[in-house]
Image (tube, rainbow, N blue to C red):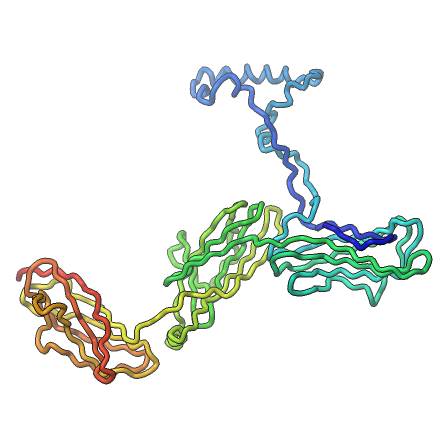
Length: 437
């Protein structure tokens, strides 16, 4: 869309977007004569398959006689490729068309002298104006164009990497001397809208899933979709067709060449999966303190005819992790447990805080005074554990005994901090199978 200020001017700007041409397609309605008389399955018959094609071919040759002015064969398929509708021609852009974030906007600009006399000392400026900023693309103030003859023109090309969404205006201005020596100013505006080519949705638990969706009208070929983790994270991309995942945090093992991934036009989707791990114990402390930046995605692609595009997402934020101060977990339980015989359960106690905690007491809590436990502690009912340093852990074994056969539950293993007089949530129930000796 072009707008100019009122007034008579000798000069006028003409703008054409420079991009790869598109295929000129004429959707045809053409058919194979055989489809009018017989079905596809008739060629399953050996006799028909041997005799029918020559018969149809001879009739088709007669109907394609160049002396036939009725053009009765214009709907016939002369070659299998005719069904695609490609005319063999390429079509230059007729307008600015769709412009997407991450692309390079390239424009061929011509300033034409439509008068019958020469104009001189022309200062030309070309700028891109967005909602946030104004970017200078061309300025000939230091070396003005000396003259443009009557009916002549001056051409130039400008480029701009599109990094903002929304309304954009290409502002072209010319300051020049007219035939009568009057200094005139010509502003002309070309407006276009930048849309988002992709929508990126992420899901984060212990893994980050990135769903890339194509919002454009052409196929996109993903050259690169890489996740750049934040400093306290490491990321590994997981692929279904590889036995070993590729480490995304180092560049040494990247493939020299990998085929691009096709995401089809009009809503095509491709998913990427990354495994995230905290890089060090200090990183765990950052997570406890509320730093939940995971990283960002770097995406590069090409269109059908090779036009490049590049997009970088904003920082992806993970769900804030509310870690417990103390975490108790079972590491190992014997596979064979006999009735009325003690067995050892291997446990681990981890301190997730930045201070030393403890000493601790470990015991089995009683849910109800009338409920008889089927699995109990063997020996002293309370086990004392020493202090655990900041972000440290300790392993220990708890001796238990089962008093009933079959499937039983180990319930109510509880930890208490004797210094802070605090009791933490009990360990979730664990099922075991008790056999007779």
